[in-house]
Amino acid sequence: MTDTRVVMDVVERARSGDADALGQLWRAHQHLLLRYFRARRVQSPEDLASQVWIDVAAGLHRFEGDDEDFRRWLFTIARRRDIDRVRAITRRPEVCTVEAGHHVVDAQAEDDFDAGESLDRALSMLATLPADQAEAVALRVIGDLSVAAVAEVMGRREGHVRVLVHRGLRRLAANFAVTPVSAPTMNAAS
Amino acid sequence: MSTDPLNDLLRTLSAPARTDELVGEAEAVARMRSVVASVDVKEPPTMHASPSRRNRIATLVAAGVIGFGGVAAAGPGNFLPSADDPFVTDVPEDKPTETTEPAATTSTAAATSTTTTTQPATAQTVTTEALIVVPLVDDPTTEFDETLCAEGNHGKTVSSVAHATESGPGKGEIVSTAAHSSCGKDATDDGEDVAADVEADDAGEDADQGGKPDHAGKPEDTGRPDDAGSRSNRDGNKHDD
Image 1 (cartoon, rainbow over the protein chains, first blue to last red):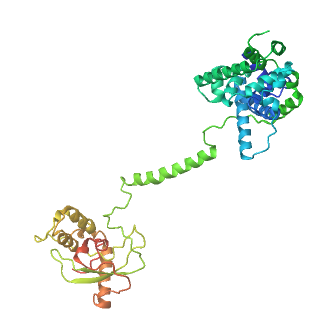
Image 2 (cartoon, chains in turn orange, yellow):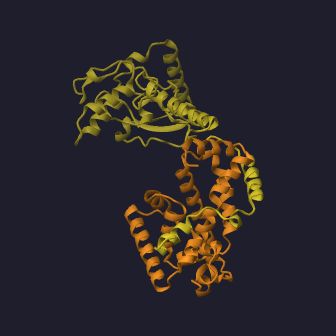
Image 3 (spheres, rainbow over the protein chains, first blue to last red):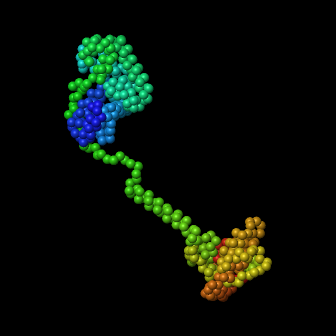
């Protein structure tokens, strides 16, 4: 959905409740939302993504723009929902059952590295970054947003976003230097 | 195959969706459809006031314009009572008031006398029962300028004298003299009824108390010469000369 007219057509049909258009939007962006939430160390990304899609459906009649505008809007909603989640946890502390595979670089992951696990490992490595660097890299890479769009979503200046992305990628490269990844594994991932 | 693990990792992050990431599409789309159907698309709220609010505001504005504008319009047209208007008093009508004031002469204050007058009920009306018709006296000994005499209006005469006289010692006496004079009273004889009424009152009072009125009301005027320009005196409630 890179053509603005196609996106607008899909959004227009989705506004009227067209199931195909809604499904098309969902299939094009659901995995991006899940990966973004996992990069932000969300325990149940599916639940949070479900809330995001409800907000999207409620605000579709107000949306205007192209594909990148839609993604920027989508990730803006996702970021706010995650902030709400963090605030709710702060107000009402709950026991978090941390899934080790999503937060810690597991040494065993390199042994059974298939396509799915490569994504999990990549997200796990991304989650080891500081929160703002991980978010900037996630929005830039997963969300495929421009620096300006990332800056708008994060509420930062573009220069700050560039610095965050640069430092995040440099730290990821340093992590790879410490724990090298075998070439067959990466081939499977790509 | 890539030799740069970082690029491979980034490529993995941006890879197309896996099948396990697209589980639950039907439920998600169903929820979205229900939300879209429940959304009532309305016009965004505007800053315009509602019709009822506009009506209330218009009513208030109209009331204000009529209220203040009416006063402003009545002022230049002399429809409002003036402070110098001798026909303005706020003394109730039904309460006879005892006033004690010096006898009016053309030049000096003399013996005092009392009179009973019936005051008007409203501020806009006044009785002229106690008006005494005295011809204008052109006394060379008067201390005030008799050219200020307002024909037929003794109160206005006193007011004019009060305004024309510069402040300082002696102003009170001058104003008092003007108040005690008959200046401005000569032209009130525009009807025979008034004179007849006054004469009748004089005769009645003389017969009752020999010039002493009934003290039924609270006295408002102490009869001091300085009070000659007060409202009760401006009514021309002179009894005798």
